[in-house]
Image (cartoon, rainbow over all chains, first blue to last red; front, side):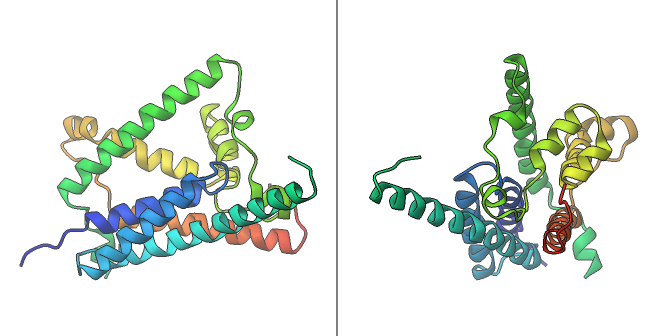
Length: 90
Length: 142
C-alpha cells in the first residue's frame, strides 16, 4: 500500500506549536505562523494526505495562536486610533 | 492508534526537520551570543507580553524568554518553572540534532515521532490552563 505524505500535516503542527510559544513576545510572527499552519493543515486534510491527527492538531494550535494575537492587534489599533482622535500619541 | 503516535516520521520529513532545527539552533546561538556580547539580556530585548501586561492573563508563550535565560545559565528546574516547553524542547531538539552522532556511536538514531509533538502541545496547554486557574483564584502565576 502506498504511504501517504505527512509533510503538510507536520509543517502545520510545527507552525502551530512555534506560533503558540512565540504568541507572547514577537508581535506579528504568530499571526503569520497561525495563518500558514491553518492553511497547511486545511490543505493536508482536503487532499486526504496522511497524518490527519497531526493536521487537526496543527489547525487547533494555529487557531489558539491566532485568536489572542488578532484580539491584541485589534485592541492595539483601536487604542492608537482613539489616542489619535484625542490628539495624543503613545 | 498508539502505533500512529509512536511510528517515526518518514525519512524525508526527518531530513527537512533536522535542517530546520539546525538552522533555528544556529540562529538562536548567534542571536544569544550577539546580545550577551552587547551586555544585554534576552528578557531586556524582547517586549513584554501585551496580553499579560494589559489583562494579567498569561498567553501560551508567557515565561518562555525567562525560561530560555534560565536554561542558558544551566538552571533546568527554574527554566521548567517559567515554561516547561523550553527544557522539553532542548532535550528533544538536542537529541534530534545529535542523532547523526548518536547513530555513529551506538548504531541507533533518535527519530522524531508524532508523540513528541503531541506531548509538546499537551505541555503548553496544560501549563496555560494551570496558569489561568491560578489567575482566576488570585495566586501568583510565576
